[in-house]
Length: 457
Image 1 (tube, rainbow, N blue to C red):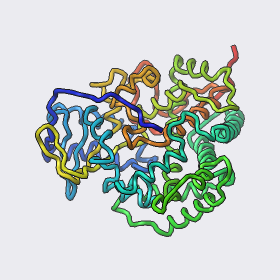
Image 2: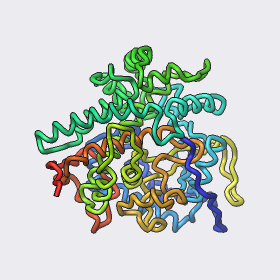
Image 3: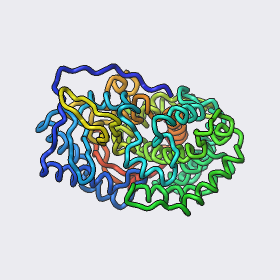
């Protein structure tokens, strides 16, 4: 889609590339960097996520980064790590500069990302160089229908989402419960049908192969390439791309204009990979609606009277999903790398410096966001989030997620189907309430709902 336009942030404040002390570098490593990597940047490790939840790791990280910003100033904070120069981006104004300045001089294809994603998409747009990126970005936008709130295959996508949601409703109607494993199975069926076609609906092996590759990719350059595993994944993937089933993204892959450098098949794994955390966001949005009566009422008012057999743009439910991603980011760190020396108010940052935006800190910074720890879907409806460079659940600028609208279309419709006929009570997991600040660390794995038919009174 067209990148969300936000106003340029101007400020007279000094912004200097300060360097953290050795002691503070160690604190940041132990409190921010290690927990982020340990949880799994590309594929979450459930046990580590539960441990992070128990200590609310992201709140600890946020508190530390606030102290670092007070100590060193709001500009980028340089950490000298063994063999690597890394700068933390701590202020919304600098986030704006970095994201709007991508891909040059702030390249998204940084060393760690290239090492990780090359496990399963070595020619993907996210890790493409400046020469190949434009062609691959155009291809992604063409297939994903980036600028359209409702994809041109909206009717086919709606039918797939509705059918899987209806089967899930039948199952939870029998059991009276919904847990993450049950939700995830249904959601992956949606993913495979939308991206690869109905023939892939029950091919859980291709999903499992991708998950194993993502788990390996968590280790970036510390893990050797798993070539045999990738070959098995690519073989199954190309089978569905060759089928090019009508009504699927695979059909559009076959039809979209491409060049010898596009590498269409290498763009598809990113779509499959990105859709799974979208399901996590939808599941956590369901938990928020189950614990916030006013927002749940507004969501049901939006759904009531809608013909969910037709493609629907559901602004409030889309806002709930975006708010879920703001509260608990599915991408824990946005990474960039300077391709040239850059100036920061009189100081110089060398080329080859990695830049890290820690999204759990940025999007929950209670010193800059009055709604930091509350469920506030309204910020996505009244322009508040559009004006803020702290609220970037799908990144921002020229490298913003090209599948944003497609993700919001599918997750919004899936949620609409679930809440249309049933009511949900959060039965396990962390307590979520409008009366207390929401936890900053929340995985989907321990969330379980008790479900009953919706009252018509």
